[in-house]
Image (cartoon, rainbow over all chains, first blue to last red; front, side):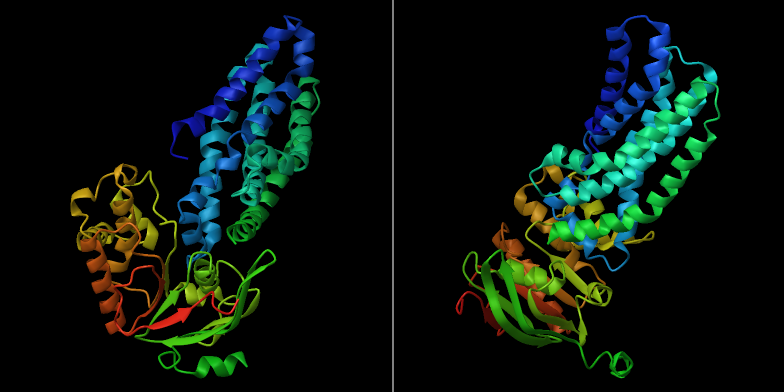
Length: 206
Length: 219
């Protein structure tokens, strides 16, 4: 992931998609406010899927994946490092830029904080679960479509929780229930995903 | 049973053993009933035509692939059940060199053997000098030729602290005659100091009394 395009592509995609909707729908303020959570979250989800299938592809191609699996130390550390790098470069940056994008929908300050926090948690879950999908699909010919198919059922709960949190803030309700569930999911995935990814990598390398 | 195995002095049971090893690819049986045992200071060359399963055999030995039949034993413990023990003493270089294109040669050597500490760079430079790549030590591997990339991958073999077992899949591919000689000398030195080498090659110039394992005959 040292190529700049791997980092910029998801960001650019997110900004583009989230910005095109207000332009396409028109200046209907109440409508924009109602659909903002859904659109921003779907854009973030699709942006996360972009390039995920390449997470382990170069490592498989140049043989370094085999070397990592043969490391006497725990391979899990390597996987955690990869996921952390992926999240920091594409997930966290996306979350940090989302408030600026969300201004186009007329969101207020308070809801921007909820958006930021929910997207930080949500993108971390996307990276963690996404790593499992990428590890399962690496070396195959399905590419991004295969990874998207594998991951979509797992991403949907995150989408529902995340956009639910933002909708709650917009309607004046308390988003802490949604945010707590997102946080719990994030912790659970942090515990499970590295091991699941390692197992999937071992199978893919066979 | 495990306890009595641990009582055996480690030095005496330095053997890599294969029992009735068999591998399949889909419905095609690559090889069956492969048996051998090699100890310290011994070299095994796996011979066979293209597609006879040499690479698959090496990958099964190493533990990247579970065997479809039989077991691989290192120091009398199953490699598939206790991989860490074998992997801490193993150096494997497969077909794909394991060299990252976006790193320079020194970083690649450091990363491949997970060298740590302030002496890491010095040791990597020494190994690269031995491999004849001092001039390119800080060049991005992407800018090197195929043969040079292969030599960066092989530089791990010349690090001072050596792993006991070397399993090399076609290590001579792409090397010029000078690099071939350096590698042969390195392998001789390793064997002399009690190391174990399993390798495959199509080169005929390896005549040093090592044993040969022929694949592809009985299938």
